[in-house]
Structures are given as structure tokens and as C-alpha cells.
Image 1 (cartoon, one colour):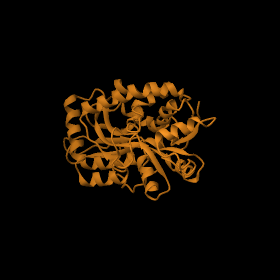
Image 2 (spheres, rainbow, N blue to C red):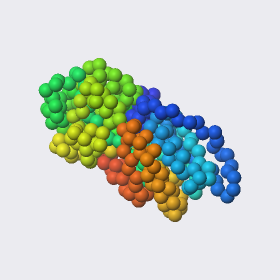
Image 3 (cartoon, one colour):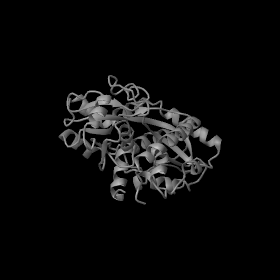
Image 4 (cartoon, one colour):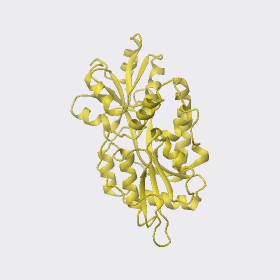
Length: 337
């Protein structure tokens, strides 16, 4: 069992990359405001405070939807529950294309396996509009890892020699970054110990300071320290090499095909939203993602723009849901609620 406050704060810091700052302008309109003409107010919600990556992506897409897909579109930040609260709220919203939520997919693919009493059902309550961007995990080595350990297989073998295994940090218990470590620990005969933090920033401080040898970090948080020479990345968890660290092999290339974790920022609507509305919204989102401005800003955050159709995103959610279930079960981790 883990302290509830730690779980909530950690999950928010990890999957939303909340440590990344961004000066967003504040929307003047408020929820429930009527729009002029025949159009209705469109609300694009996310489950994190203003300033983090989820908020940045939400605002940039909403700006592009406004005036095209809808006469008026606003952003609503509904933080809480590590990203769960907004989904509990959005599932009951109008199923007409005016209630939209942008969320990391972990809330829909991992949390159902973690929480005993989740307030929403991934497949009953939501349907996908499409993905916006992805990020992968960087398996990152700090100064406490011996310089002789240069590859992922060498890390696994080194961990086996330690009585309690190597300690690895993640930005929060119950996140995909936590469970990447679980995947590796299984290959190290269970000899890896998870150290959860309340976000990526404090984990990075301990990694840089030598308190932990390994950190599972969102790639955008790791890259600046890699470029400065203070950290090494042994592998990344995508299905292909990251554009941000093209010289670093994937875990697949290192001989660990099961160690794959690609997190998506994706958009969803209530499940009963008509298919033609979902398709029109999906087209509008894909058109928005063609913007050079969006591509440049998301690249600065360590995100790769990755548009998809509604059908493709629904398939991704189903696949990730089925992949994470056995991993979470093997970890023995559950939330205390």
C-alpha cells in the first residue's frame, strides 16, 4: 500500500510532465457560458494545473479548434486525483462533441489495473478522438551507477549482484515509469527496488546527486542533463529510437522486447457521441497538429507529434490496456482506495 497523497502527486508529475513550465494565457470565458449564433460552447478539459505539458497541449489544440470546429472553444483545467477527477466529470458531459478531454493514456490504460474503485470505465464511458503527441521513458543513469555499466544488459546483471537489487526512481507510484522498472526487475530476478518520488524534478535531483543510481524519466526531463554530460541514458522505451536521443538504443534493440512504454496525450469524448461528430472532431485535431507552431513547441517539451484517427487511437488504448494489466499484477502494486 502507498500513501494516497504520494500516489496522486506522483502520478500527476509523471504522466503530465508537470515539471515543465509554460506561460499560458488564461482563458476569459467560463464553463457553461452561452455562445453566439447557432454554435455551442466547446470545452476542452485536462486534469492538471495550468503550466504543465498536458495544459500546453490542450491550449494549443483548443486555439486551433476555435473558429473552425467550433465558434467558441475554451480550456478547463480540472486537476485532482492524479488525472482521474477530470475523467469522472467528463464521462457525464454532453455527448455531442462539445465535451472533450485531453489526457495521458495512462489514466485509461494503467489506472484501471491500479485502483480498486475507479470512478470511470475506459471502454464503457469514453471513445477516442485521436492522439496528439507521445513521449517515451529514458532509462537514465546517474553518478551512483558504476561507469563500467554502460548498457541495459550490464545494468540488469549488475543489479543481480546486489542483495536488494539496484534502486530505481520514478516520478510517481502507479505510473508507467514505475512499471517500466517492474519490467526490468523481472529480468533481474526481481532484484530492483522502486523509489517513488513526488514528480520528476525531485527524482532528477537525487539522480544527479548520487542518491539513486537509476531513474525512469520522461525523455524531455532527461535530455538537458544528458547534453550537459551529467547523466547517461542506457536505453529508451519506444518502438523506435527517439528523435531526441538518436544515438541511444531502444530497450528492444538492447534485447528486452517486452520493455516498451510509449505514453500518449490523446483526446476523448463521452462514449455516446455520434460517430460522425467524432470523425469531424478527429479531422479538426489532425489539421491542428499540422501547425509548425505546435510542432515546434511540443518538440521543446520533449514530445513527438503523433496524430491518429479515432479508430487507431481506440486500438492503441485497447492494446496498452491489455499490455499493462499483467505488468501491474506482477508488481503487486495497488492503490489504497
